[in-house]
Each structure stands twice: as structure tokens, then as C-alpha cells.
Image (cartoon, rainbow, N blue to C red; front, side, top):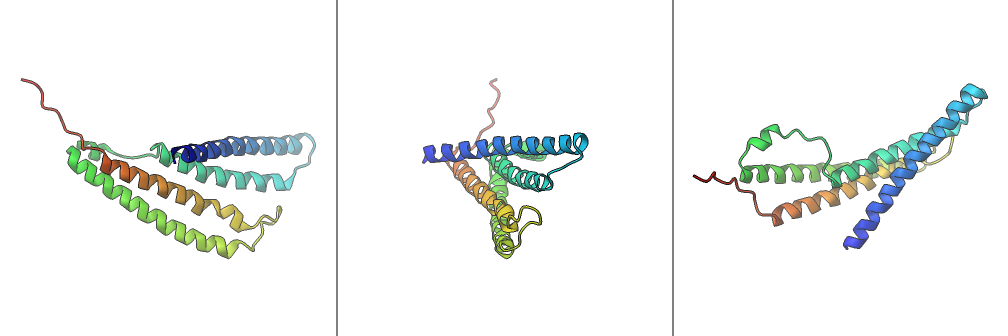
Length: 163
């Protein structure tokens, strides 16, 4: 199971690397073409936008895995460890609920837009938007794993200073 998980994250990392690189190259070619040759590839901008959307959502899944999303925890850090753990569990349950709602809503949107092509590349909108429920599903799995790990971990205890 761990091997499959590592392969998934390596594929996502490589897609993020290649997608970001492709965006840079496409935009660079268009800038050079526009200012040097007075010619642009109009579809390059659309492809770069699609890559940007895909990289954003996949990057968000990676941030969820690495727990690097922005979190304001000033008040939470003041709480006793047991209360902090309860708050963390409730927060993760709320996140899971929101992810489920988002997946459901976005699947409906993807199905509605699968037949509507983009104007230049003719790629269906549903393909572009398909990354949203996919990334949300990955985030949901990561969040459930975090919840399981929270229940397996013993709560921290503040040590009393030695007298």
C-alpha cells in the first residue's frame, strides 16, 4: 500500500514539474513571438491556463499531504493538549465534510460541461474541470489518513517542571 502511495505522489510531483515547465515555455514562446515576430499562438495561452488550473489543484493536494496549508493556530496552541486534539479532530471532520460536498458538486459540473469545448483547443470544459473532484478526492483520502493517525497517536502531555 505504501509503495502505491509513493508512486501516486511521484506521478503528481512529476506532473507538477512538467506542467509548470510547460506553462513557462508556452508563455515564453508567446511573449517572444508577440514582441519579436508580431505573431502569437493563440491556443498556447489556453493550454497554459489549463495547466495552471491542474497544477493549482494538484499542488493543493500535495500541500494537504505535507500539512503546509496556511493555518492560524495561535489560540489552538494555547489550549491544553487534550482539547487541542479534540479541536483538530473536529476541524478535520469539517474539512472532510466540505471536501465531500465539493466533490459531489464538481462532479455534477464536470458532467454538465463534458460536451462543451473550449473555444480554441476544443478540449472539453469537463476535462479541464475534472481535476477539481480528482484533487479533492485525493485530499479527502489524505485527510482521512490524518484522522486515523490522530486516533492512533497518544495525546501530548505537558511535563511538570522538576522541583
